[in-house]
Image (cartoon, rainbow, N blue to C red; front, side, top):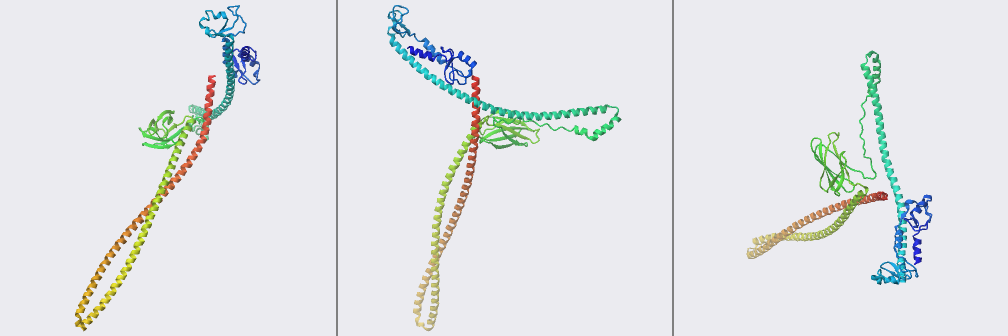
Length: 570
């Protein structure tokens, strides 16, 4: 038990005076504790830690209440005495017991007193209580040591963070100082220009005052004959006209210098001519604004602004030379901006300035949203292209089917043509047979006439021959009728074939034109998709570059805010 107490005392002693710690502070480098008074006196003479000899200042000291809590716990613990000590109430009795309720040592006589009568079961032997207390203190000591190591590690990390924050603070302050110096240089340069113009005007004013006094003296003077040569000389030198020239108009100074920390305003300008007019402006970030101007009198106009594409919200908007004011916008809903007078302008126009992003971080978010929209649009175009390719493939298959049908029609046409040729051959044969038959009939008629003249007795045979001839003539007529029917059918087939051929040619031409138009549309869409893809890649590159710059600036701003907050808290 004594060794445990000595360990606690050694742990909670100052590294300079080697006594119990008072208002303990530790070194962030080695985590050794010191009294605040001792270490303050030491740092008044030295600039390093008395233990680790590393550079140390009073601002880097860390207050450690854990040592005060340990000392309070040890001081509030019950007193522990060795075997053989006498009781303070009963001098002749030795302390051999310990009461957990009262947290004090007792003797055998104290056990039966009124103080411990109601909780005798809480009184145990001194050795048992000593072991339990020793175990408890050992556990507390282990926790204290581990906690001390954690605190030392955390202090080291905080020290590194402080060094990093200090370096970043110096860098950011240097950048801010550069920006301030640049803006100040612009202001000083512009002020110097204005002062030079003022000096020139003052000199002109002084010269004009002198000439005015001289002219007034000459006018009031009675010795006009003596002054006439001087007046003539001045007029000859054209001094009055050279001195009293009309001063140049004073140019207005634009006090809105460019700020590298805040994105620039978007300017929307539209000339007016007394009529109602509107125009859509496309700006970076995927925004589209519609500026509407309506006449309201001779020189006044009502102005309204609409977000056609983009994100609704509250944005800073200035109309003409008016200061910017926050205005709430909703997509595809016109927001009135007020009235403007353009009567004094040489070329009447209305100018609206819009600030979409207060910081580059907001601008990066807007650009990221626009890139996401472009990616979705590219994916939709890709899907549409795939669908168009599938439709073209289906159309090609349909065209192949049509070509197969056309081939079948051509084969049918060839068959019909062959059939027509066969019918023509048959007609030729029939015509030749009819001609031969007519010749034979003519020859037979001649023979019959000769036989009638020669043989009157053969009239019966002649009538028989005439009957035979009539029968053959009837057969021939029937054959002629059948031939005419066949010719009509052939003519109908030919007309039907020509009609089918024309329809097939028309369908083939229409399909070829449709296929050619679809191929042209597909080529145009492919070119447009390629252009959009190139634009998307360029936008993504620009966005990545802008994102890196914005992340740097945002990190710098966050670190500045953290440093300012830390200094304010400190």
